[in-house]
Image (cartoon, rainbow, N blue to C red; front, side):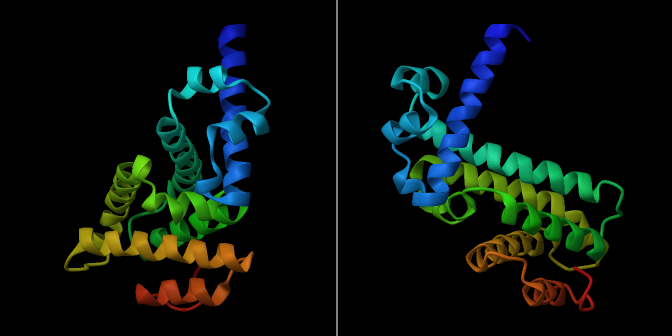
Amino acid sequence: MTLRQETAARTRQSLVDAGLRIAEQSGLSGLSVNRVVDEAGVSKGTFFHHFGDRASYLVALHRGFHDRILADTITAIADRSPGVDRLLLGAGTYLDVCLRERGVRALLLEARAEPAITEEVRARNAATATLCEPDFQAMGWPHPHQSAQLWVGMVAEAALVEFDAGRKLTRLRTALAGFLGAEAGRT
């Protein structure tokens, strides 16, 4: 990577980090281009060079947030066979990462109502359900894809509940395990 490319990557990351800080404080509604460039300490021209418009920026924020979570989750479950244990480990990893990430509420809850990223949310949830489908197949569930879709929704909702509490909620995670018919304490 050239020095120019490294500088551009750092600037882009600075803009993303600024957006995550703002999203954590003010939600997506507080993410104006002016506020992002002020927070990042760059010009509007720099913002538009990297993202084109606010909608592209929101998509980049959403993708980056979920790519980090997905990478950690896939690493955690990589050596596991499909089934309940893999689902629970994946969900627990997802929830743990959400607790440490900035902007969780904005990028999980508010993102659903943001027209610029509605399709991105839909696509991400569908891809995650597809990753979970083999687990439901291995458990012998009659409608594995639909079950995986519901599981993704429940785990995302659990992330919001834990975010509001500001900590891991063992009973909530045990309840998630219960929906799979798993014994308490496995998460």
